[in-house]
Length: 398
Image (cartoon, rainbow, N blue to C red):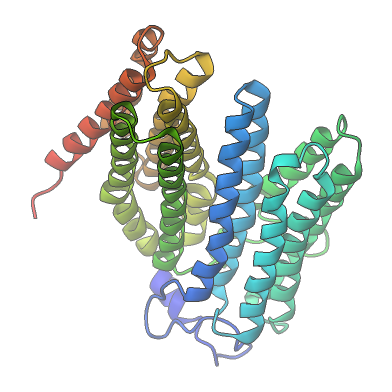
């Protein structure tokens, strides 16, 4: 069955279908206001992650921030999967989203102290969201509905990892990372293992029939959220630093870099990827690979860019230390690497232009050792702008 045929087959009212599922008989859906309301919590979560890294700009801080980013991402994207199937206009589904929003807010509030005094709060918020959402999703589906088996397996995996999350939250701080790494490993392995569960078998990616256009749109909106956080940090830091000539110049460089990131994603990657997933014969597999997994480096890169912008605005004429160079040049490079991997998974080709830009950012490490922050950030921004211009010039006519 082709993807369009599979979507048409999911009309409510068909035998065994739940009235809580989206009506796709009229074509592709679009994001609803309650979904956008849900996303607001993740604006705060991204802010918390950026501030955590700014306050602990070393290897341990970076590792903890990356770990927590993956957890936050997992919580958000699983909810996005659910709402691709379920109708947000249904009262139970809407209540699940609002309840999930509260659980996400609890989790996000505890991010700065997740590895110290707030472990159980962070874990409880995450587990409540994961298990609660999957439980309600299962209960809203009648027996015989193909998606019910998927949600039964999801719930089993969420409970299995949830035990480790809660145990880690309650454990001593020295043991917590080990338990949480094991818990996250279970969560991350689930989609690749297709949620194989004793007595329930496993799912196939062909069972995860999604609306590819809507699915891609939701992830595009998350990229906007992350880029928006970069703008917020830039504006707030500039206001605190005072609007002198140096600050205005640094602000212009930081904003231009963020605008270039937006351009590179939405001019090239977003539209083509949305078309590809909508037309793919197995959209669930592409959604799992290109979006659930391979968008993580893109979001991580945006957070690094935001941190680099704050360092730039605080001390534009000072030389950067190793950590400052890493975020200023590594942020854009990681972002471009994520985009490269997404397109590689989509079309099976490596982007030569992005590869050249990543190499150029790597070369800039040498002059960055002696240049002031504003010069290093300016050179990194110049690479992004040049890449955007190169791609725009090379786009097909019309």
